[in-house]
Length: 321
Ligand code: ATP
Image 1 (cartoon, rainbow, N blue to C red):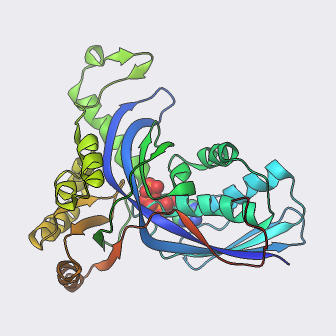
Image 2: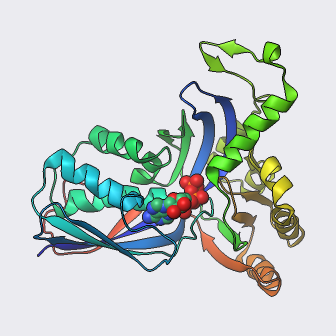
């Protein structure tokens, strides 16, 4: 029996601009992903039963069958390689579900990596990327993790200079925000603001969203110069405005973090997590204490430079990864 355990790290978005809606229904984005030291643990055991993928999870709300991204990732690998037998996968969730921290996507990427290792598969980087892309727009980022620029649907990834060690306070408000709903709000804004005749169409792509800022460059430069203060000032998320409108509590959390000494604070992805960047751990701990007293779950953590980490394995040759 072969088995393997892998950590799947969460992400935050330091920058998220939505550029336009594409004809395929997806949004064209420009985003800076950053892996953080918060992870789910996935344990894989190969079993004899043919083509049987069995998923267990400690989170009561997650689907265990075909709707689970881990199940879908395993199915893709089994089909592509026509693997014998099946696999039992146990997910220990620590990443909040629907928190904008990419929990499902990182689990899916870790499943691709875990099974590649468990079955010692010969899978090129491009093949891995193509499987990841089928599973979701954010999944390719997690194959590598670290600090990266995402373009297209968020799936065209270019690694950036690593962010120096930075202290983040994550505030988890205890409810989730639907990613689909958050993006739909941008379309609603377009429909309110532009008459049909005014909607510019270029190359079959609807180009409706507001002016493009240059902050992505400033953020990249701040990372390169290791200037966390400037980075904090230029954090940006296009989805904040409409999400804050429905959930004003999130804006209050952001303001509280800034008042407590954060050099910047932002909603991650489509929410609901709000994170603050703190110049020192003591300040972050103080802010965490205040937010906890208000009834929120909090986590003081740092960035990390990887999307996954193999923990235990009885597989000898892991050179192929
Ligand atoms: P993103 O930031 O990528 O938009 P998120 O962090 O807000 O995502 P997730 O935690 O990935 O949200 O969960 C989003 C949805 O994915 C949930 O409805 C959940 O049921 C589904 N899902 C499927 N598989 C998983 C998984 N392994 N872990 C978490 N969610 C999963």
